Length: 193
Image (cartoon, rainbow, N blue to C red; front, top):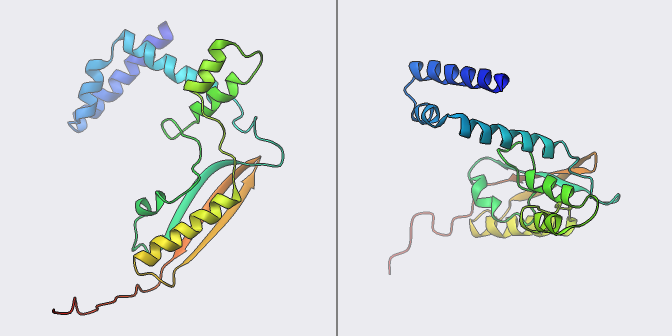
């Protein structure tokens, strides 16, 4: 308990000093909400996250398959936002919490260990998320969706490439989109009726 109270003091001092430099809304509210009960919940959540993230995420992936770890999209030049293209990606990796660890996948892997009881089945079904196995067909489908979207925007000669890198049963998927000058049907505006 002494370690927890010293951490709480350090966190309070840090946010107090930070609030002196800049009046920040988050710091003020965080200090008000910082009490023993909330600290215990926060530390318990962090501890559970560390324990589950320590599990090997690619443990249930078959030997000849790969876990989809990351999907990255780069547009050259940046005439189109990545957000517009991300909705056409057919296969997304497992969800991450705080963009750090795959909690739901770790819970799923944990629930698959040992004897299957009702609690483990419930955990697997409600909280867990099965591993996303890379499928080359869905990559081709995503590429064709990108082409269709770009043609609708007038980029008839756009080039879409996909590259994959593998490491430790994990796969990193990267899309490069090279845009050329868009075709314009009416360069001087719409014709008069």
